[in-house]
Image (cartoon, rainbow, N blue to C red):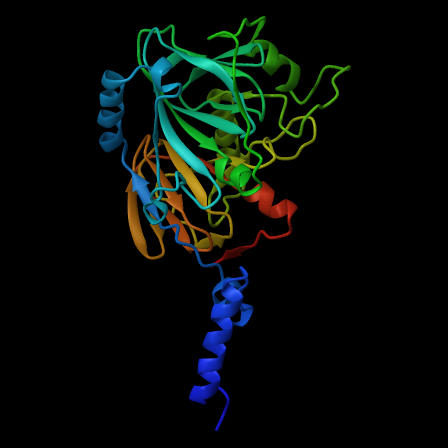
Length: 348
């Protein structure tokens, strides 16, 4: 009789497990199949947040609490498979932030890196370490780790943007720090035009020396990105999975714009049907223009402007675009995975 089938051996093993459990030990052979798996396994599930559902709840939040009271008035987009964990994927956080006319979201800084992708409105600003930029729909703005930042809205209309942060990654390393500013708003000496002039034209100030792995260009205006994609559409071959796609970069190093979060913008022409694709980086998408569907793991998710959806790690998906061109922003943890030699992709 084999040891596995011997009831006496099984009883001895169970007794042994109970003893070592008291010493905070566990047998690897009992859990190995759940830890080292043939392919990625994640509780993260595909999900789509419709703008016409989210927007009224944001408006209601604006009636119930001020930006100053909340510090940041944000509705967190929690993945249904990760409820209670404040995560859109295993490694990333996402939320919709509302700032009303006349409001200021007070200055603070934290070790988490953040991105802002503007979904609605025009005229609000973000100030980062003394530099202020006015934001418009489709703009991508970076708040580097440990940089003081505040937001204000001197315009006459509400502003809404998508926040993306590396909160779970920083939490994994127990490296969370946060500090509030001495004043509600920073004194700003320069604006986004200076930042764009210094770093947004494939050039940099002669004396500039990088102090961080984050891009010194913190404002990537949508009109420039859109023009670049349109030029690609006219003159470049179409990729079989994503048509025309650009990666936001650090203009000084040519690497990722943020060390922990990869950011992208893609254009897919009307009628485009992409080939199935999968990668190990779970990805959050935010729609700027157009309508269509993302078929994730065989299930169609119909999207339109301002909708946000998430594709889990290693789950096959493809895009189908309807009657007008679609432009979609996305972010993922690809820089971290690539730096650790973990990232994989597969077409088909």
